[in-house]
Length: 276
Image 1 (cartoon, rainbow, N blue to C red):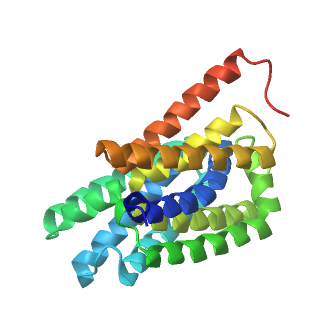
Image 2 (image 1 turned 60 degrees about the vertical axis):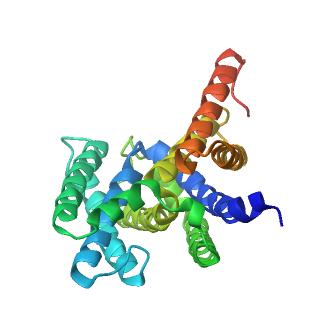
Image 3 (image 1 turned 90 degrees about the vertical axis):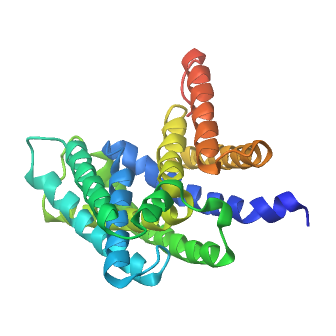
């Protein structure tokens, strides 16, 4: 087997898995205009991981760390779902930004008192994409497949709420429940993805391909084709760029995703109209 395939094969599979589910979730995030939800949830999950390390000496990729991170994500999901219907003076995006700042400050404080805590922060930011193993691939495949099935089964209420999110035409307990479900599933995906790719890659996969597709079409089927195509192409280019030039993988992938968005935006600007 070629050395390049041995080194980049599993990271490329991880990129495909992450971008497949994050790209779809990104279409909902854009409709809801909660762009920084992934950074906030990732930071909140990081607080849970640091707490697990401090209280139980758990490593960042241990089951206990995942449980603590998911517990924090559950609390955040309930908070976001409830606040949107009860707090009308400020936008949900502002609430998300405030919660991110609080979570980041908490994480920095815990890092200061926890031995080796800075390693957890570094891991959350940069991930460990280059060191992806088969265990992580299989776990991610099972988890993302299950979440994908869940979204397929509940696609109608989720789509209905996302399409009218800013208009606020749908209200009541039903919206709170479905919002909670959406943020929980999103939180699970982000928690698992950040452990592999780090915040930069996760944010890039969540937002940039969805934005690229939105400039070209409004049809979900075409959006998903564009999202997956751009994500796979940028992942391949980013991995090769990092391999041959000894560059960080995460920033390289994000850079190529950004370049694709710029090129598509230019073409779309001089084009006649969006795709049907």
